Image (cartoon, rainbow, N blue to C red; front, top):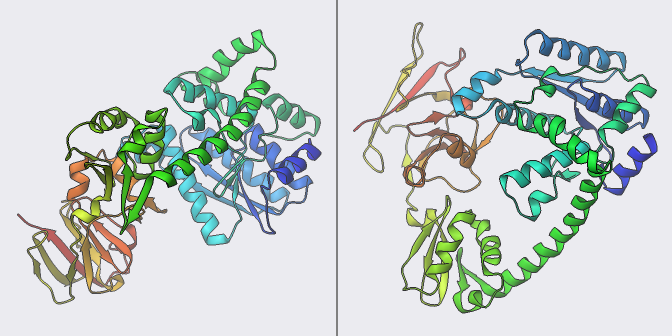
Length: 441
């Protein structure tokens, strides 16, 4: 197992330069075997443990167990407790999605603050097989059929070479201690149902089922590379760009086969959903002027081309707020006031009022529209979040997103007006002066 692990890491170039890896350690058999493999192969690493407070005392015992193992082996441990239930309810998402967001936001923060090369997650071949089946159930393309990748961005998965049974055998043979997570047997969760009910049925037909799915995923990864290269070449033939305006030649588009697949691959770069593609294809032979919108772009059917423009080009105005400004009438009606912090001050619960720490703001402030790639640190969160993800989580419609104005200081978002301030500008016990910004109608 040690040699297979080292060979897999080297073959996949998972650790491509000197430095420390951050290991995500839950305390379960997969992550503790990964912990053991890193110890025995001398890769420098630290560990991180998330306590999601979802299983009461059991969650605390997991944290204690991981801490003791790190102390025993002289490994630095980062750990954090999360209020996962509250986070889930605030954003209207499942507990599993909430835990995932909290986990990866925190991991990214640790990587940024401590200079780790990447974070290692203990996914194995069985996890990959489960993910493929989940994606098939949801409906998917080539990308979804490739399952889990051994390396994506700053995440590596150095156990993807092993099946769960290999990992368990290694734990027994080398006396690797671990804890069982009781939630892993609860079949109300889709993944657990597939793990405990569906895959065992396939294995009755072929005991190589998991291994064969892994081999299929590897072949499909190669197919995906060829496919993406073909799409890229065709896109470069058909598309022209001028001043951030893109044009796709309609005559050339109509010669493509299969057109729906090509057009989706072209337009997904601008966030147009697959469900919109049939209507766009119908418009190709219709009159000029038909318009379609994604979350970030506008598509217009012209006589000879599909024209794609960023939505920001529809409203490029920027409004500056100087330190002495007390009112603003465009694009929003704002009242702006300053006051000294005083004992007993209570922050209004009204989302149309922002109370900010005046001393961390840099004037002039700027009101502008949101842009693709914008991110902020939502009030109450430690990590950064893409604005596009915030809109999705809070179920913003396209029209609502287009109406949003951002109050910014320097290159940082201070307030999504009428919705949420950035945690970095909130009132704290150290605040001496307050800037209050109020929307009035």
